[in-house]
Amino acid sequence: MCRYRLLLLVVALLLPIQLIAAEEATVAGAMIVKGKTIKLTHVYAIAIRTDSPNEKAYRVIFSDAAISDKDLALFPDVLIKAINDGTLHAMRAGLDDHGAVDSVEIYMPSETTWIKEGNKTELKTFNEKTIAGRVHLDKYNDGSGTYAYDLKFSAPIKQEADLTAEP
Image (cartoon, rainbow, N blue to C red; front, side, top):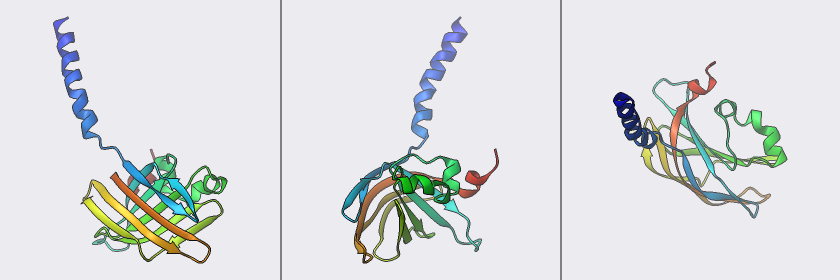
């Protein structure tokens, strides 16, 4: 009986450490698409393969609904129906191995907008485990409307190979 209580005590003491150690993704902010403000509530960071063994690239995906690892691996193709139905709004930022934004794609019902210029990053953490900081765009007009976003986030980095691996 004493061993059982001791074991329970050890488990109870270690549990908070495990909960603290597991990093959770957080995001605060919104994007404005043609006058409509969309709060983004989920963020995912993925390290992707490149043609060069010395270069790394990253995708940071922001959305207003949760996306499974399986769907992240094939984003946005497997989610086109949800995007077109308006049940998922998303933004994908491509970062180079220095943390600079290369381009941003915004996914809305019946349209995808690609923004190459004006995107800014201010990263506080950029290492093999986490990308954290701020991405923002003051204003972009593609002729059909104006776009802007301002997102503060922190996301553990998932490896592309882990998302596509068979269980």
